[in-house]
Amino acid sequence: MKPARRNKFASFWFYRYVRWWMHRRFNVVKVMPFTPKPGHSVFVLINHFSWWDGFFGNYMAGTNLNRKFHIMMQHDHFEKHFYFKYIGAFSLQKSTRDMVESLAYTAKILSDPGNMAVVFPQGELCSNHITHIHLEKGIERIIKQIKGPCQIVYCCALIEYFESLKPSVYIHSYDCGVAGEVPFDELAKNINAFHQQALKDQVNVEH
Amino acid sequence: MIYPRKNIVMKTCVQLYLRRITARYLSHINFNEPLLDQSKSILLISNHFSVWDAIVLYHINRVFFKKNFHVMILETTALKEPALTYVGAFSVNKGSRDVAESINFSAKLLDDPDNLVLIFPQGKLYSNMIAEVVFERGVMSIINKSSNFQLIFAATFIENFDNLKPEANVHLQAQTGTDFKNIETLQQAYQLHYTQSRQQQIQITK
Image (cartoon, rainbow over the protein chains, first blue to last red):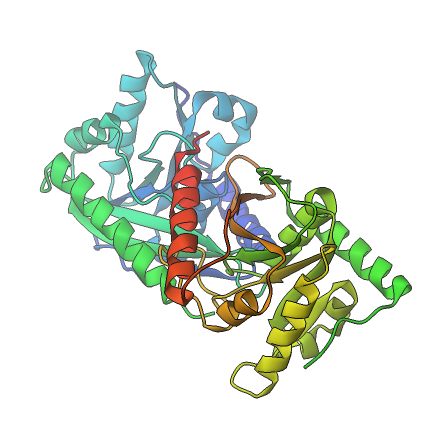
């Protein structure tokens, strides 16, 4: 497992760069209003459908979540883009002993109320049109090991085009409760209910 | 009603522009190849969630259907983007007497086996996330007024996955008959294709 070596300077400029890049590549970047609980770290679960998702997490870290950004990356992707460790990325190698260490490291990050960690609960790239979110068991392990107040937030990013050639992204955020207070099965059920809600809300979105 | 215009120079320019933006914004256009009856014209019915629907289907026509492309667009769009009329766009003005003229023109185009007419029966742009497709009535009049055409359903979805540029996946299905009793039966048939295509789309993981 490769830990993050977060650097304030790199994080600040990377966030600025991501903002500029996203507004150049996307027609509309709309983050639905959401305020995290004060004094809580934020465990962000995002639906994983493109390589933009991590950047969406970084964008939200600076716009409405206001926490120090951390993100779990697949080991092979991390090795390819090693420089992401300076903005808070750490690696996870699935189906190895290393994985346990990565999960414990994520929980350690989330034990500090000033931090946030982005994890893709599905563990693989899925379509943006899916109607069911599968949660890997690792999520439960992370939640169990968190020491301190931590809010779990499900973010559903949906892509639309409408009248533009460029895509637009709409990010819907939902509060899934505080870690340790919601049983894992209920959390999975709530996340799927929130995902359905996001799909319904998306149909009526203004364009 | 605004009719398609014929100008070989303008047509080439618009074609080149469409090819350029397709290459610039999309990584791939994937589609299946249904069985075609070359002795018949094609009425292509598609979902409408973006400007890409028509551009992607225009590309598919160029490489697969190989017919004279025509597309029915809103009059407001035709006035805003008059260049589209050089590549087969003609207008429909919803809620006016002009509608009958647009329907008759579409039906007339379908009498020629070399033509393809693309129609978005939803009538306006909807989210790409909708589960149910609702049709407006006009398309049924076109089907009733023409006979020698093949009806093809298209369901388009755009996905990113691990590419910077998204890819378009188009699910095509040729219909064996065109004898739909009313708009509801046509809508049900399209809904079945749309739901199946969406299910196939959801199965993709990387």
